[in-house]
Every structure is written in structure tokens, then in C-alpha cells.
Length: 50
Image 1: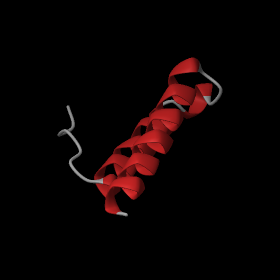
Image 2: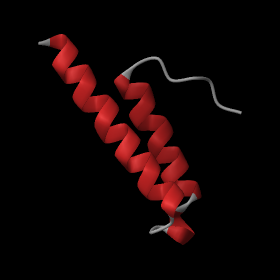
Image 3: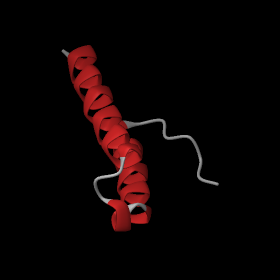
């Protein structure tokens, strides 16, 4: 089991790993949810830094 990501970079790395595991089902609901989660968290992080 992977450690909890604590930075955007770690989150993106974890998301890439998860996407790779889901690659055979690239349009799966889980894959889309992970992509959306990463996008939202990244946007929130950018807003917090402003």
C-alpha cells in the first residue's frame, strides 16, 4: 500500500501510478474520478499559494 501523498508532486506521482494500473480500463469511472480529483486538488493548491 502506498503512503498518503502530502504534496501536489506526490499526488500526481500516485495518480500516474494508479492510472497505469487502470490503463486497461482507461475510460473506467475510477480512472475518470482519479483524474478529476487530481485536477481539483491541483487547482485548490494553486489558489492557496496565491
